[in-house]
Length: 256
Image (cartoon, rainbow, N blue to C red; front, side):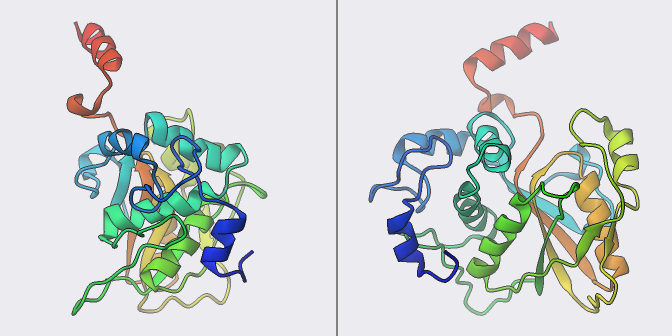
């Protein structure tokens, strides 16, 4: 499949909207969303993509950005990609990250690829690195996302990171436990030389920032001069104007 031209691969395996699984037609939006899902995607846009330090516990990273809030249809798309046999969604979600976070020009059709064009400017990154899986045989989504972003942005990808020990799933842990769980849990492979590298670190979700920060520290120790993290979605409270009516009522009643 990797050797096939992108257009031919799209004919053999039609691209689908990651939010509803509908086969994408010529009326696609941004090359990877069906028109019916555009309002939902816009509602969940993280505006601006840059993540506020007040919502996360960042250290070692120079900053972070996400295309969406981790909620509703976007949450379901990520879970289907990670856990329910829909790995191809990583392609569509990476395309949306390229458009939303990096200002790439959206593809005109489902078989296309976003084009990154910034005349007279250079991206501040020299290497793309995915967050490695915490356990063997799991966590392949960051690598799929990183591979697609590498092709769109024209930046080489490498996988120098590995886990030094078994970690508990981050889900369900509070901030203190997450930081402890990831402390010294990532390192660069022996012989890795990242001297002078400006790294774009890729993950699927940023929650507290503990994972991307621990990975960034390992990359800096490997010689990188800076690390910026990017993800499909960030887990933060939805702003009031982005909540669905029923969720607004529930949250308002809980606050009374």
